[in-house]
Length: 605
Ligand SMILES: [Zn+2]
Image (cartoon, rainbow, N blue to C red; front, top):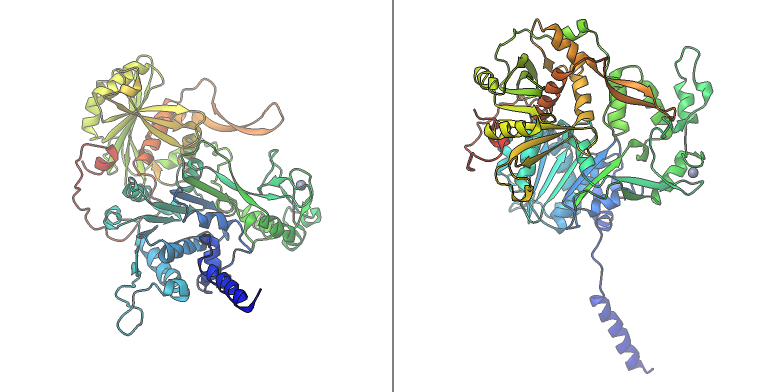
């Protein structure tokens, strides 16, 4: 090859470099090459790295994947879930500009978060900083970069506190972020989700540690494809998830037995030093350094194949946190045992699971009377009232309960009546907004009654097993072929196990927002106390919890109360765990016609 040919070849190779195909960066690559985290945002400040959080890579990628519409993170403490959201939003701002709305449980939290964490993150990451609005002097334009609204060069981000359901309606959204959803009022969350429905290109990012089994992130996890992070056991190589107990109910963590003192207390320092994780397959002893190595070889595996396409849900407990050792986990568990609240927050925060009451606290009639409020039978309590009815062979059993918006509720009246027509009088005198009635018995007749009085009544159908806490469906009582159905009624399918457990919390006074009138009758109390979750030992010698109705007692009031509780939740009445104290602006008049779904006009009379 002569000089000239060599030169040409070199030039060609050089030129090819320009046109060389570069695959688009994965979000993880983008983040690790361009995002900086300051000490204000995270404990691991410096260039963003996934070295300690390998499980985040797949989650980050969902922001770029057009097929993923909804991402729910049911993650425990110290697992970097909020930081993952920053990075995903940073990617949107830098690579895929679209309007963003981030909703917080309340206005105060929204402002603190924005000023202390989000805005510093934007300013201190060069890759975001270059998109910030500038003034004429080249500085950041503080009129367009504010606590609640940031006008980046190609997209805008709004941050709002939940509480006033009116205010989420006015924002453009393509990317919706709901962090800590278990403390965002259910009505607000539904409203946000409704806003985004019907859009072509949207993304919903939700996260929380779970609080209730009936709603929030736990239900989002159930509705999604239920991914869990599997890692190879360093001993047997079997793919496994880190979890608290094995199928037999034994702890997977073990520590030196000498750590237990004679009085039942523990030498926590010895626990911290000696704890290891035992593989469920080979019983091999896994220590913290092996955990970090195993995580690098981990992968997400979906637990459900029937989830709606594009609905991803990820569960991760604090075992996976790079900053929480097995010993720390054991110590936190032992410390939590002192109080019920302690156990509950350990289960919610560290195991990322909803708290299940052990047996619901069998309570005696005198204890039940503590639920009596300072009002009389028939007093018109609550902003809205719901009637619940159970169907018997020749009569109906019913209860009327009043609800405040935050979910506080009051039993107003209860009783029995011989015919369906008798409800008309009751509905008028207590100005009841909606009713729910069992459809398990005298089914066709009840369907037709519901139809005649629609949309007031909802039919209730209880299930022993269903994947979600509830599901609403429509049914035409007159057309056997439901595909050609014309005039439909609403049927609420209720997960009896979940709502039974919610009912137990109400009954035991745990939730402190469920009341009965002063001087409540013996029969109502008897029926409400006859249903219990009891421990039984099954054939395989395993202890299981089962629902049982005492003796041959009836529990119709229990059923009525459970239906009403589930329906109130559908309406968003019980979802508000934090009450927003700020004054709410008056809701703007709705443009939509009023006739459609019950939820829309539920707040009106
Ligand atoms: Zn093993």
